Length: 346
Image 1 (tube, helix red, strand yellow):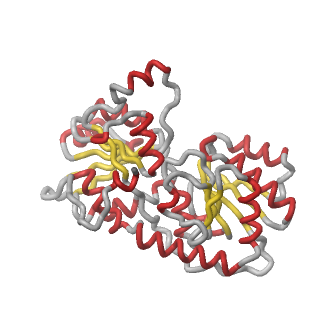
Image 2: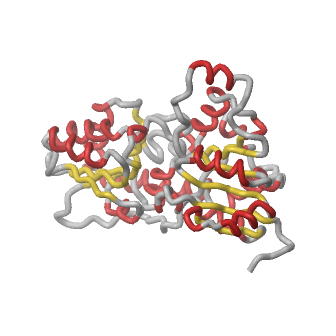
Image 3: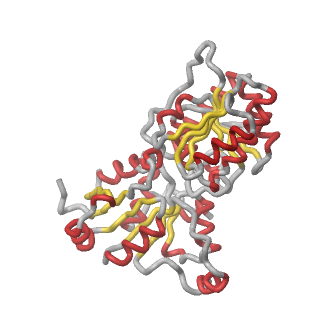
C-alpha cells in the first residue's frame, strides 16, 4: 500500500536487464522501501495511466542496460527528477565535432542524474563525456541476495571448473578468457572452463571454441540467472570495460575464489593476494599460472574466498550502501563515518 507520508521513488526496470544483474539492485531497493514509498514498474507493461502517475509524483529511477535510450525517452515524458543507472557503455558513434561540443554542453538533460556503479564509469562520464559533477553520482551496488557460502564441498571425481558470468559482448573480453583456457588445458586437460551468460556473440564464441579445439574443455551455458555460478571452483573477472562489478559480486556471494584483471576501482573489492588475485590486463601466462596454482591448492582457494565473502558482507551490505542512495535521491546527509561517493570514485 502506498504511504502518503513517505517520499515517493518510482523504480522502472527495462526488459533488457538480465536477472543476475537485477539481483544486485534488490537489496538496495528493499533497504529503501523501509523509509520511502518505493513503487516498482516494468517498462514493458507501462501504460498511459502509469506514465501519468509517474509524471505527477516522486522521483524516477530507471534501470536499463540500454540506458541512453531510456534516458532519452523518460527525460521527454517526466517532469520529476530522473535518475538513470549507467549499466552499459556510452555510445561511441559521436563525431569529433560532437565530442568537442560536449566539452561545453553536457548530453545529460537538466533534472537528470546519472548513477555510475563503478569508479571507471564515473571517471569516464566526468572526464571524457564532461558530465557535470552535479549530474552524476557514484553509487556502489550491494551484495546480491544469494547466500554467502562459507566454503565449497569437494565432490570426488568431479573436474575442477573455472568460469565466468558475463554478457556475451565485445566489452566482456571473452576472447581473452578462451585464450587463457587454451593455455591452461594444454597443461591440465582435466580442468574445465565454463562461460555463463547471454548475448549476441553466443554463436561466435562457440565457433571460436571449436577452432581452438576446446570443445571438450570449454562449454557455453546460455542463462540469464546467477544460480550456475555456484557450480564453479574458481571465478575469472576479465572485462576490459566495466560499468559495474555485478559478476564479481555474485562470485563473492557464492563463496568462490576470484582472479580479476587489474581494472580501475577493483582494489575497492580485492586486495591482491589477500582476498583474491589481480593480473595485468590481458596477460595470458600469469593468469594461467595462477589458475594452475589454485587448482592444486584447496587451502589457498578457501582462505581467499572466505576473506572476500567477509569483506563483501562488511562493505557492501544494504545498510552500508543505503546512505549514499538516500543522499543521491533525497539529499539526506550520510553519517559522518560514511565516505563521500565522489571521494570514493575519484
